[in-house]
Length: 245
Image 1 (cartoon, rainbow, N blue to C red):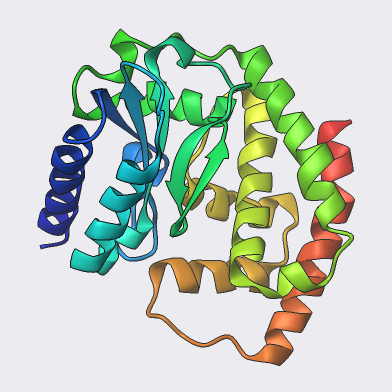
Image 2 (cartoon, rainbow, N blue to C red; image 1 turned 90 degrees about the vertical axis):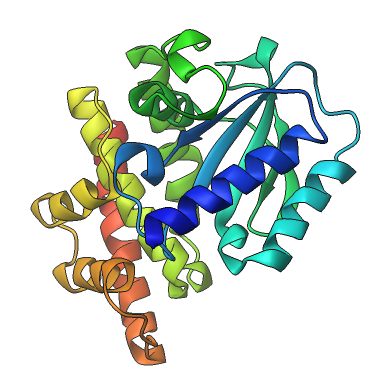
């Protein structure tokens, strides 16, 4: 049933978006492409390859909002709309619908690498037929910059780390980044969670992430949120400078 629900959502999205935009392909990256997808917890991360740039974003916004009205699962369907001429370019910002809103953002070198690794297409030719591979050098440079300029500065703040998403993404991103820099390969979120204890991450926080990602939904008490935030910040503020040095 889960696989059927996923396929129905993806098929419905492809049909709807093709009716309003010149779509050459719709590609999958993230957890769904790398085999670590958890229904109801993971996002559907998509790239729509277009024959020409988006001129008016209103139709694509309407498609996403219309699907969300039909099925709540569509709220986790995130898509970036990239003209075929910009494929592989991490500098360009593109129309994106994610987290229930429209934004402009780039596809990172990590995203491009995930596409070539999964090589999964919902519609049209697969990534391997149109997308050049991201170099190890480009991937490593982006990861170091992301850790140094985004993740490390935010560890100086207290409030964001009381939210589940910051704890989850912060630790998982760190483990994936450390592995890529050391071994030139990407790992899944599941592999990152398995690796975190050996990197010195707080065991209680890792168990907390695993329970929320793979177990039944449960409310996180405020006292634990505060303690968890401090443990996560302290770990990342210590380890990030060592990894990017």
